[in-house]
Length: 91
Image (tube, rainbow, N blue to C red):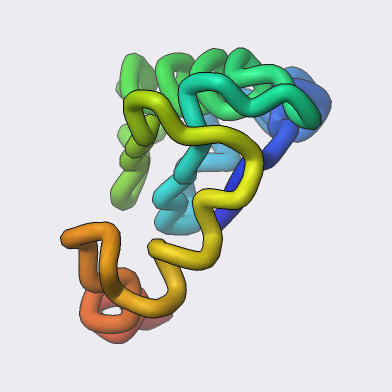
């Protein structure tokens, strides 16, 4: 669960194999510390994979959000229940 992540290198190195692990990325639209493309590009690439298709590749961009979007993600005020999502996956 990258939050304000920068997955460009990981997606370039692993390609579609990165999607073998469920990933839900969160980013603020106006993050000034980590460029939005650091989550948008890798997740968009994963969502287009077919061989293998991603297990679960989600991207949530908070409109008007800045760098600290983790506070609302982790305290469940974002409207997304990450804890249920994490528990819904097993190896």
